[in-house]
Length: 234
Image (cartoon, rainbow, N blue to C red; front, side, top):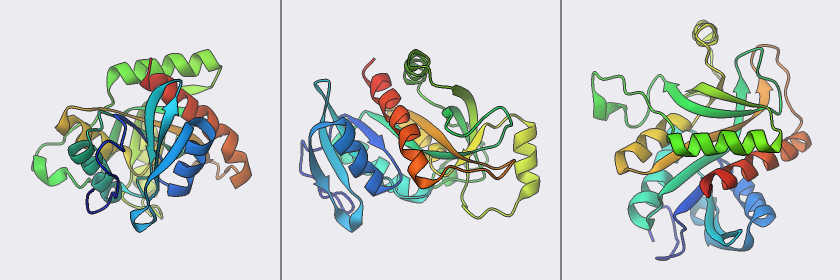
C-alpha cells in the first residue's frame, strides 16, 4: 500500500495497462480480463487485476497529465514491481494522413517540460518506447487490419493550448498526434529499467476540427486494448 495506491502486496501484476480515465480502466477490465478484481480506489483512481489468456494483467488509471501519471507509474514500478507499462488513451491527430479511429503507436514523445525535466538540467532528453513492445504492437495491429501510424507524438502540459505557432511547427516536423502523458511514462520507465509503450486511438483532429462522439470511441478503444494485450505477451 502506498499514498496513492491502496493495493496489497501481490495485487498488482507485472504488466499494467494505464488509461487516463479510471472509469475506462473499469470498462477495459470488465470487458477484456477474466475474473477482474478491484485493487485500488484511493481518490477515485480505480485499478483492477485479472487475467488475459492466462496472463496476469492490471489495468490502472493514470489521471490526466504527466504529473498525475508520474505518481502512479513511479509507485506501480517502485512499490509493486510493475515491469511493463502500456498507456492506452485517446489522441488528437496533427497530420492529414492520420484519421479518426486510427491507432497511433508512439515511437518517441516530445514535450515542452515534464516532471522529470529537472533531473536533466541542460540536457534535452529524448523519451522513447521499448522497441520490442513497439514491434509487437505493430505486428498485432497489422494482423488485426487496424490502420496504424508509428512515429513521434507530442505530450502537452495543457489541454486548452493557445500556441498555434508551436502546433504548426510540430505538424511541419511530422509529429503525428498530441496527448498528455507518454513523455513522462517513457522517462520514468527508462529510469527504472522497465518497458513502456503508448498506444493511442485518434478521437479528434486538430487540423480539421472533426471528432468522435463518445459512443463512437468505444469500438476504436477496443482495438487499442486488444493490441496492447497482444503486444505485452507476444
